[in-house]
Amino acid sequence: MTALATPAATFSLAQQFCSLRQQSELLCAPLTPEDMMVQSCAEASPAKWHLAHTTWFFETFILRELDPAYRAVHPDFLWLFNSYYNSVSEQPEKKLRASFSRPALKDILAYRQYVDAAMHKWLKASPPEEVERRAILGMHHEQQHQELLLTDIKHALWTNPLRPAYLELPFESLREEAAAMQWHEYPGGVAEIGHAGDGFCFDNELPRHRVYLEQFALASRLVTCAEYLAFVEDGGYRRPELWLSEGWQTVQADDWKAPLYWHQDKASGEWSVFTMRGEVPLKDLAATPVCHVSYFESAAYALWAEKRLPTEAEWELAASHATVRSRNLLEDGVLHTAAAKDPDGPQQMFGDVWEWTGSAYLGYPGFHALPGALGEYNGKFMSNQMVLRGGSCVTPRTHIRASYRNFFSPATRWQFSGIRLAK
Image (cartoon, rainbow, N blue to C red):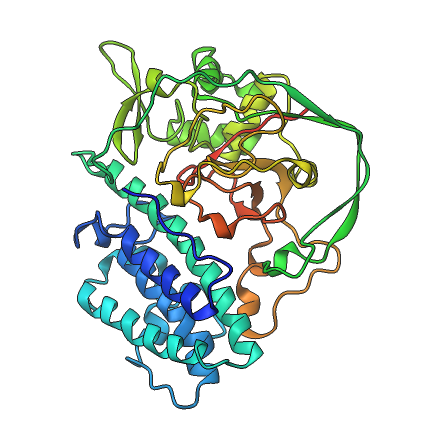
């Protein structure tokens, strides 16, 4: 897979829109129509549904609402491809998305072309500010689904007994050594977090506000597979004193013994890891960041290592002052974590894995959701979720910034998530 193009900020909005929409379809190029129907876990959706839902977003919130000349493709698409916007319409249960054998894939692609043509025509014609605002939101929404599409297809291919690879390409270099872990100290005091500036942000990144931080230190890089293997071999999954109560219940109920996608051969005892390029010996990935661990696993590892997870305010402060070296995001085409090589400064802050923080996902002081149905985008999930920061190897480069707040429930493992330690 070659590196994907990033829609440049210097392009017109219409050009950025077209580039983004083409990228979603390019991500599906290695897949068969059968691959695109699979929904292999509760968190996932079929690739075919991602293509339809992202189109639904533009049709529902821009064309249907703001363009009086627009004629919808099909009246049932309004509810069929709705995800969770209850003020728009009812919607099918999420677990049933794999049963949508109709509309056919060719019809979904035709739906995209129809909506794209209407959107492109409007975006080229200097549309009203509200149209531009919603179009930009829709583009960032689609970038979220590009990441989810790859996350979901990795799980789908892993559950296939043949364990097929998404990319039939070897990694360029394996058995690298990671830079030594160092500690970067921060003096604490009053700091500001939240989005600043004129660029795009989601409503949950606002308002920018002051926080007070005690002195802290942050690890210079992410925890590696080799370091996490030491936790596994030390009985980490058999020691209840390391785990939060709900985490320990999850370990027992789901029989966790290692991160998702790790497999130990019963005869040899050797570990392997399923990647987007197929099964790879763990020893070849030892220096790369451990991936697909839950908040529960991350917190247990941190306690075992006699450290802790950073708060999201600590992470953002460090990321705002770091020299950003984003060398492993979606457009780089690696689609897996890579070893840290930079000699100094916080490394891997953007890309490789989403980093669990010790912060619950809540609204900032003074938070207000967007008006109308779009207000259901982020605010309605501010319960029983933990914050992740930084992006991953399947996150589009133009989608990431220091103030970005991702969030998942603490048992989530199918996402490209990992660990950075703090003390």
